[in-house]
Length: 183
Image 1 (cartoon, helix red, strand yellow):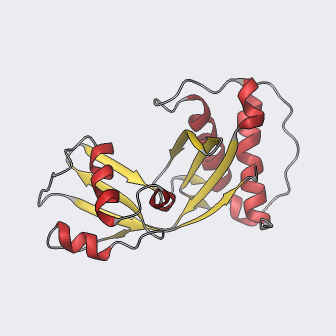
Image 2 (cartoon, rainbow, N blue to C red; image 1 turned 120 degrees about the horizontal axis):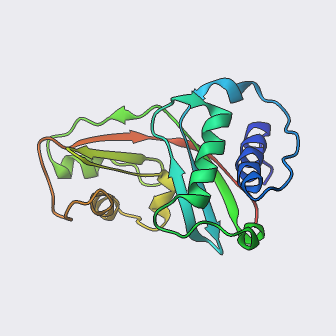
């Protein structure tokens, strides 16, 4: 599977941002016109198909190239679920970059209504309720394949119980363009 020029550039920016933290040379990249536009991205790191770090932004607040580089460094060194990446792990670490579409707020009456609106494999989901906030990228459907499981685990990620429901709960969905390094 070939990667389009933007995806190739974003993957290189992410990997180079991590390499630079180890004092490794940062090769020149081919410029792309989209790199200066404000964008929201997530960078996911995996080792042997297991999550090794994932950090991102939900709203565009900085240029695409800067967002990818910052999120790559954060995924490698500041994801609280994992120890900082060691240089010896870099060769066995695969990088994935997800470029988020603008989130669309869902209108719903109850949880069953939400479950009926979710599109497995397509929707990323942002949950907000008071001080509780969490998101799952669309890729999470690969391991949580039903709308019920997806929503329940998103609640847990936000620090809420599985059965939690509140009229103050807001949900927004989004799609992504994603690119992943080959193994």
